[in-house]
Length: 122
Image (cartoon, rainbow, N blue to C red):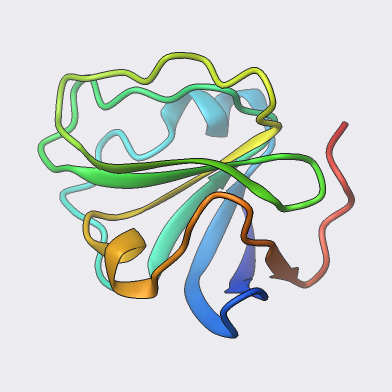
């Protein structure tokens, strides 16, 4: 699985070094089987319009983004055994440790950048 560094370009803040899940099997597995995410870790899922934490033992923050990296929805502290409603404008989702959204000040409308640069997702 590829990796990328995610930077909030609007706020000049590095959010995480993430694994990038583009293959169907990787998207399905997501974070299942992991015991936690540490600060600075994450999972970028694309394409993705909704996520769940069924079978997980910890909470996560989720940023849903349009294909150009613009945050369209921020979900703080999604608890285990929950799911988000689909976000029609989203093309990808970034799963991060709970508390990352608050600590970074990331808001809808912020633009996230990926290094190496990922192709826009349609």
